[in-house]
Length: 151
Image 1 (cartoon, one colour):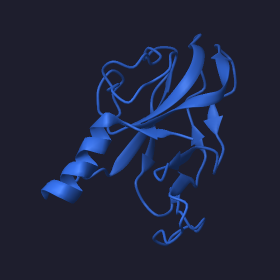
Image 2: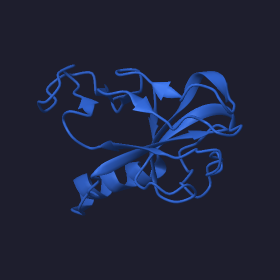
Image 3: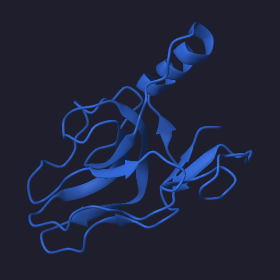
Image 4: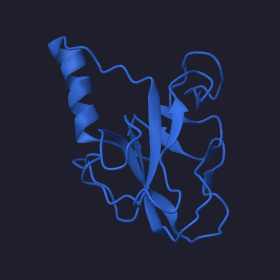
């Protein structure tokens, strides 16, 4: 499961209670980090793999087909009661052409460029994963990256 960042919590509070618009997020980028992430981390201060050895964040479009609704249905708005959404499609990083290191956490951000952007959600991997040159491309299979808003 993942937690919401301070950045996004503040945007939700401002939207609901203070009449401010929520940011429009057309795409979400998934990143892997080598150290745990906290609520206050941003894209600039997470310890992400360097943009070498073919590492890059993976883009998922923010739409009804990329993300499973809270009612576990694809292609329709959420009507479930568990506050949980998950990836409806596989999230596959590039195959490593260099040694990336040990992945401990994942982060969902609002920009593609390593070292930039706003953290939206983050979570610890169930098990740390060493990623070396020649390994299979790291992948989150469909419905394995879960985000729960109703904690």
